[in-house]
Image (tube, rainbow, N blue to C red):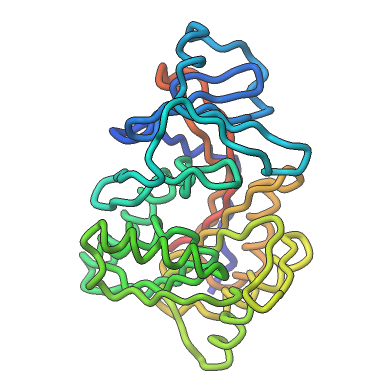
Length: 301
């Protein structure tokens, strides 16, 4: 089979707000968002422009994250007493919002553009009479896993954090999807994939969404730039002959969609198909300003 075709230009996958999420305003190094009933202010250094909404809209936020000198660290300040968890939804998936210690709220809203793409991929497979087996690595709180399960996939969800997998199971219960074919696995992603390769396991779809740095449950160290090439190659070995997609996403300042597409092209040589690449962006409520949040490359056929 021929080498994958690589898209000539970057694509910006734009996530617009939905009923339970909105990017209300941004600027001055911050963003003002709505998560269900709560307004939240979080730091975003790339917002170099000036906010549009009046100051009182920002000052009446229910929660503000004050960063410290350490990356992603800091503390929340609350106005009133917001709930510890509260239900949110995206299409058929329900999940809990939470004020985590790492400035996010237990999911990444810009990923909704990816969820929609994955939903379409799984539904196309179901229409062709297939039930795709999908592997979600670094699956965190499981929204992508649940979106694919709701569309009809058999999902294997892997994350090194026992807490994250517990939250994922709770989200499955909340969504009414606990009886779907989902395997919840707490393990180092690299170790799991290595074992799956030895077993001869295969999947029709793989999502690879690693952090820049992390630790496995056994103290395993993950460094994106050092370890991603090997893991991407192992994932390529796990794709079945009828595989439909491999999605690679990364949050790192020194990476790009073009770099990720080059990595996939090398690891998927001879598989045919097409590689698209670019970035995920959150679009403000007015629709004319967007914040680039992460980079992606995805192979499909």
